[in-house]
Image: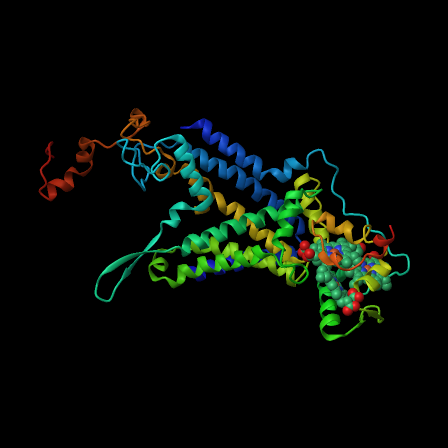
Length: 332
Length: 128
């Protein structure tokens, strides 16, 4: 139900763009104003969220420890899994951000028929996530060919490696395949595995469908319902150089693609997708596991914290407490 | 804010990275669609221009398959009502004589480099 609801939401968004840019002819709105607004919301919203996180105190030293802590000299420390130096922490963060170390640790409880439980290593989520994020990154970088003139050698290089197999024309991008396979896997995981379906919400399905919609509309536009790419480049270049023009005759499918991307950009800072910035700020990962060596001072300023004393509590609930025969300090 | 230095540095990197398309184009000449050399010997392409702009690569791909696999060498255009040989060099490049000033103008601009010329000849390119 939640999945269906999200799916319809994405269909509705696509329909808005189809009607808006296609039937109503609002090419400037869907091609220039909304995407520009979306990019601004994305960058400003992202920074704002991160600053809010930066303002929150970390009252306790709560890194997760995944190996032997620094101890007596003859006991071998696990310097990356349980770092006690800044270098260690940086390496741990790099492993986390670039290779999703903590997903690699994922395991799956399995119940045997005789009632025994076994925890087996489960790498599929890690593999799916890695495939998804890296193909998304490459696709993102590849799109810079529409925003640069001349196109930098790096972007051209990515482009030619990605179309390495030289299948058909326009050539098939490998990342397109990997991307769709990975998103499909991430979605199927949510509907097929009962315990994951149980905890999946609209806000889990919606970004998946949105991203799948973006991918499929892009693929559809490249290989099937082709659009005039030169006109597209004219539009995108105008967008980033503020000489806004909306060339006529780009197919409506392009505006669907662009509108879904805009929705993603706006949705990003409002949602769990903020883990892109959040991963750098998670205290369970970025703190030094040397709490025995250095005292962690709670940076919270207590004078600013409003707390509820027992007296206030009793004032609030005195009547109800007396009613139930709970002893009170001040009688009614 | 705690860890101000680190967080603001991180955000600065993020903003610079994400706004790359905007600042990268500052001070460059405004983008104009590449000027293409018009064929001298004809007024019309094998299909209408809009179709050619969007679909020429798919068309060439089809031609290639039909010639190499099925031995079908003739293409009947419903637009010009003429028959063309399904050939990259002998048809396309006969009218569009100069690959550099036609095909490559567009392709460079959108960073595609068709690998066709690894094998097929560009007649003008050979003479130069």
